Amino acid sequence: MPQRAIVSSRTPSSPLRTIGAAKLAQTGDGLIAIAATFVSYGLTEMIQCYGFLAVFVTALTLRHAQRDHDFHREMHDVTEQIERLAMMMLLVLFGGALVTGLLAPLTWVDALAAVASCSSSDR
Image (cartoon, rainbow, N blue to C red; front, side, top):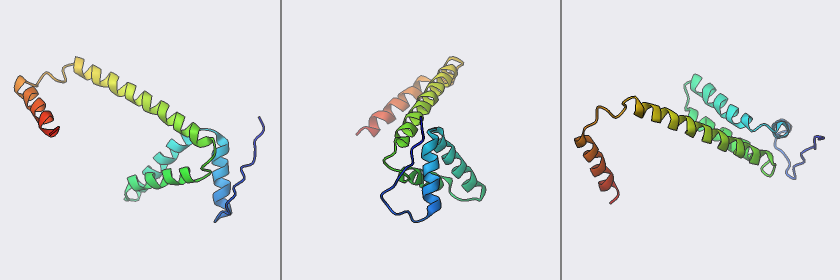
């Protein structure tokens, strides 16, 4: 399938910004978004700054670049697949922890206190 050029109706503020966005969208790999967030978080934490904000800015930048491109739908699909895999792994690990006695130290008093705190927070 031939690669099509991505044409924007807006005038870019920088030629490098449009070139980078077009190359990102042409790769068609949704894992690039996740890799970009990991890299931005890691580099920001290495220089002793707040990584959460860096990830937020990275996500906004990726979303803003070529907003109407199909690449965003593919990134969303890949992110959902990874979320499902992570949830499956978490449930398997939690089930294994329950089987090996994670809740063994708890008593009936602890269980009643947990139920009471849940019912009082609903009000």
